[in-house]
Image (cartoon, rainbow, N blue to C red; front, side, top):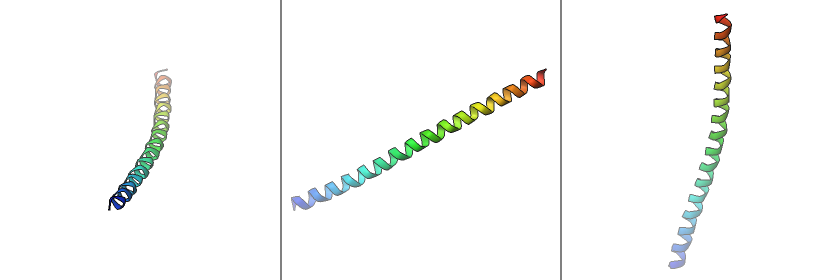
Length: 57
């Protein structure tokens, strides 16, 4: 009986570990995507600023 409980516990722990690994991969992907968005927003802000300078002249 104790062996069955141990096996069940190990099975649940493996599933939890698998999900945690998947979540960690998702977070890494989201960090990369957010960095790309921040970079893109920086370029857009720079273009707007440059356009404002041109308009002011």
